[in-house]
Structure formats: C-alpha cells, structure tokens
Amino acid sequence: MSEQFNPFAIAQLQIDQAALKLGLDPATHELLRWPMREIKVVLPVRMDDGSTRIFHAFRIQYNTARGPAKGGIRWHPQETIDTVRALAAWMTWKTSVVDIPLGGGKGGVICNPKELSEGEKERLARAYIRALAQSLGVTRDVPAPDVYTTPQIMAWMMDEYETILGENHPGVITGKPLVLGGSKGRNDATARGGIYVTREAAATYGISLSGGTMAVQGFGNAGQYAALLGEQILGLKLVAASDSRGGVYNPNGISAAALVEYKQKSGALKGFPDATPISNEELLGLDVTVLFPAALENLIREDNAANLKCKICCELANGPTTPEADRILEGKGIVVLPDFLANAGGVTVSYFEQVQNAYNLYWELQEVHWRLDKKMTGAFREVYEMSQSRGTHLREAAYLVAIARVAEACKLRGWV
Ligand code: NAD
Image 1 (tube, rainbow, N blue to C red):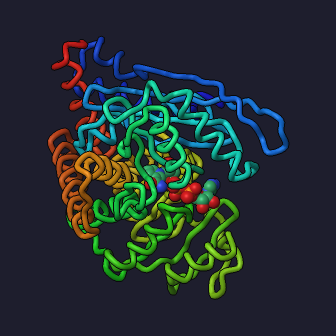
Image 2: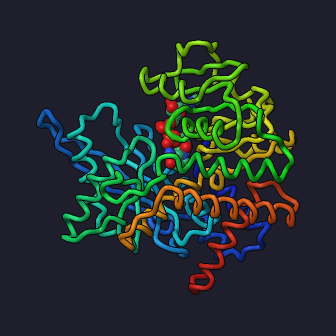
Image 3: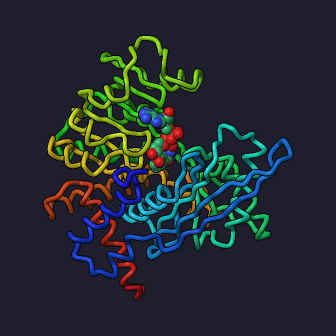
C-alpha cells in the first residue's frame, strides 16, 4: 500500500494537524499518534473438509483514556494492520466527538467470508474470542459488527465469551440480534445519525433540502438506509446509487424502497428498471444537494474531487476522502460532514445497547431515536461552533473537539 493511501498515515497526518492547532505538548501529541495496545493473534480453525486453516487477526485498542475501547471487527481478505490502526484511531475520535464515555478500538481478521461456510464462520468467530477473551469485556474493550460481520457472528462471539467466563455478559459485544440483548434502532443508526447531522448542517448553512436530490455511493447497510431516511426525514429525491458493480441513475427520481428491494433480491443494482447505468465516477460528479459516500476508503481523491458538485457531502463511509481531496472540496465551498461525526450514529446506538444491557432494561424505538437525535445534534453544534471560533472547516473542527477531549482525559489521568 502506498503511503499516500495508507489509512494510518492519513490518520496520523490528521492528528498532526490538529495537535498543531491545539498546541498540544510533544508527549501528548506523540501518545495520540499511536495505538496504546496492539494484539496480533493466529487462529487455527478446522474447516468443513477436515483440514485446518490458519487465520491472522488483530485487535487494536487505540486509546482508552475516556473509557473502554469500542469498535467493530472487520473480516476482509485485504485487511492490514494499518487499516485496523487507522479505524481504531477514528473510533477514538468518534466516541469523543459525540461525547460518549468510551475509547476507540478496532478488530480485523484476514479472511474471505464469501468462501466460508456458516460452520466455518462460527468456528472462526469463536476462535477469535478464545484468543482475545482476556483483553475484552465491558470494562476493557467492546467489539461490534463491521464490514462482513453480522449480528449472527456477534451472537456466536458473545456466547463464546460467556462460556469462557461462565457468566451472562451481553454488554461484551454490541450489534447483537434483538433477542440476545440488541438495541432497537441499531440497524439504521449509522445512516440515521448522518441524516440528523445533514438536517442540522443544511439549516445552519441555509441549504434547502426538501425537494432536493441525493446520490448514494455504496448501496450497502449504511447507503440503503441513507436513501430511505433521506426520503422520509429530509424530503430528498434519490437520483443515483451505486455498488461495487456499478450504479443506476434517473434524474426524475428513483424510489429508495424499490431500489432496496431490487438490491436485496438480485444482489446488485445493475438492471434496475426505469434507470440508466452510471459509473461510480459519474455518480460522484452529479449536481445533487447531498452526496452520501457510503462505500469504502479513499474513493474521493485528488484526481476526481474537482468533479464533485454536491452542496453537502455526508461521509457515511470511514475515510472516503483523502486529505488532498479535502482541500479541493473546501475550495469549492462544499459542506463536508466528516466521517467520524457523520457516521457516529452506529456507535452511539451501540453505546445505548451497552447501557440497556447493563440495566437489563430495554428502550422503545422512539426513545432510541430521540436520544440519538439529541447526541448527533449536540455534536454537530459543538463542531460547528469550534469551526466558527477557529475559522476552520468542519473536519478540522471535529478533530479539534475530539482530540482536545481525549488529550484532556490523558492529562487528567496523569499519563502526560
Ligand atoms: P456494506 O458492506 O453493507 O456496504 C458497502 C457497499 O459499498 C456495498 O454495497 C459494496 O458493493 C459497495 N462498494 C464497495 N466498493 C465500492 C466502490 N468502489 N464504489 C461504489 N460502491 C462500492 O458496508 P456498510 O456497513 O454499509 O459500511 C459502508 C461504510 O460505512 C464503510 O466505510 C464502513 O466502515 C462505514 N460505516 C458503517 C457503519 C455501519 O453501522 N454499518 C458504521 C460506521 C461506518
């Protein structure tokens, strides 16, 4: 991976810029540039054909000054420790920017889940927990689902952890199925949080949403709910969406519900009736009110950022915009809602799940939505005020808010 696109190099650069602005002392700056704890494990897993395969896996506990580490587990063939480090750093800023009492962490397993049977997935999930159980727990580190990990995988992981400890511990992991202590409202929480932040940003910057248009890059979990809720809550019309195999476009509007149903049935967007094909690059350049990048990292780069014409870019994906592209978007006056603020709804409802598990008392959906709205709206306001007082754009302001909080916690603990 070239340093230019190495997500951890990007994450460190972002910290360096914020540290300079905040005037952090050298020790605090250096502390925040690195994960505080990295665990690398090797997992032997019995395959269905009787052979044993060895999987390499990570857990990064980036910073726990504000609370136990929190972050998803990704299963991906191209997983690297640097990607997990970057994502763990972003989790630290994410829990901080929405001011929930947690630190940041992330896990990864190098594997191709599409090639694994359900039984192999279960044995891999349990092996991961057996290797890491001593480092996990509600007071240490609480994993969650992420790319290619599901509520079922979380259920196996929770069961393995409880079996090892011989106790009930639903809060050890979030994103569980509802019957095992999951929270209502977790499914759409990431997109919903982004929608609330978009609503606040539009009102603040005087951008009219109702009757406006949206395009969604990456029509997976986050992207599909963004389209549905963008219609329902913001009154936006979906004009384009894409997945890894290409996209569909109709300037007169596409029903989000019909497109979700089509994607769920056929597994792709290609061939959706009443729409023409569109490439991912063309989608990024559409003149829409809101663009939702909801796919993977580094898809908005120096070479294509100048094409963007949206008014608001709500980053539901982690790290979709490179720092060079960021400068270009700023120059064009696009309101960029930075990833770790825009997609913090997921971890916020994960935190609500932990709270409900701890009390063994479960909230109604309306209560989850109300609390999420309050958190996301409050976070946006603090970031906006920081951007005004420092004369900077929202991404840098979000880093300043988040990093200042973590730095203060490190200081108060006497670490630096
Ligand atoms: P997902 O796997 O459900 O969906 C990802 C989608 O992106 C898929 O439809 C895939 O086909 C598409 N895609 C992949 N490469 C693409 C490309 N080059 N161009 C266009 N589309 C492409 O994943 P998800 O859970 O929706 O997560 C999407 C992003 O949001 C990731 O960056 C993830 O880290 C971030 N995120 C998700 C959550 C959550 O709760 N789901 C929370 C925070 C952040």
